[in-house]
Length: 490
Ligand code: BG6
Image (cartoon, rainbow, N blue to C red; front, side):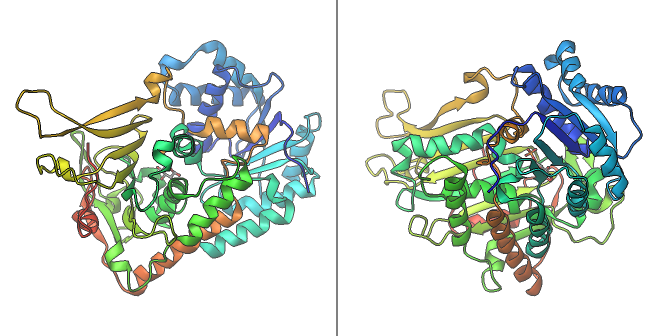
């Protein structure tokens, strides 16, 4: 079996001029450079369709940094150091000759290489074949692919088959950038290094869990891609289900990739399918209409540039998920995500069960349990709501809820919220797969989403609408209210 534990210093970025590279990957390389985490010998080859020279790509890198890194963090010396690592190869990925040019360009580069495919999944097979044909696939090279791996279970299996034809599973790095986020990694530490939580982390201690990824951006110029996907495939299939896995998994024996992945697989296997009988009460699907965010008018989904006016693609979903195992029996996991909502908020909220503080006044507060808020955006941190006595001579039997908060940005003196890609890029170079998805996880997640979508379509469920700038459709409130719960709002 190929070994991938050795360090890589030759990084080939397919799609270097694409949105993902310019917005996320090049800025992530910048922060790594700034933190002196990159080896002097690291070289990055950008592959794209345009005719560019090596000095042109250096300029493109500088432009991307000027656009996507806030000026307060930009230092010209670091920008130059990073851009000098880049060189360029023009490739028409569908033509075999292009791979000859690529291998010539790479002739003196240190092996093994990491190939990062920031390109359409439709090209994965062609690129793999091209690399193979030019002898660029070596036993310890690595291939990195972005979500979405497919459009449904069948297409994801096809992609995985193609990848495994050329690469061993230990060489394949399937990215979900949420797993690179610091707070997401911190979930494992929070759960398994604090006995206070680990003893309560089950259906006896927890009432319900919310996972929210609300975005204020709309679809804008990604309409063509998004309309074929929808919010369930775009956000739930990987990001939200990965968060759910980390919240719900059993303690792994070790912190290595095999142990963590196999615990996540067990959670996905235990997810209760949403079928024709349960879909209407457990699934809300909606689309944004014209509205306003921060005083600015925003078009509805079907009024965006390039949109089809009759599209019924969902831009919002709220789901009640259940995990059928000993630990989580009867605990709802509510997932909610949508575009063009009032603000960008990404958080996990764990509601602990109440003891019933009957010695205290029976206010709304006294009947609630403690709440743990794990925040990924707008800040990265953890806050536990605890009950205290309000100051005052005649306040003996009332209680109030106050946060005990950890703000990682402040406590760890971070400059900004890392995008998640810094950590993932380092793991690719170092050969650590624990933050990457294995094939089984991807396919089980697709299976669950496919079943939900089939049940939704087969029973002609209604698509609801919500105003841009709102908190989503009222039906999403009803979904949780029907269990006597409510979404946590600060
Ligand atoms: C991507 C989705 O994977 O994640 C986008 O395709 C979404 O639609 C983005 O906007 C959200 O990522 P983040 O890190 O901004 O929450």
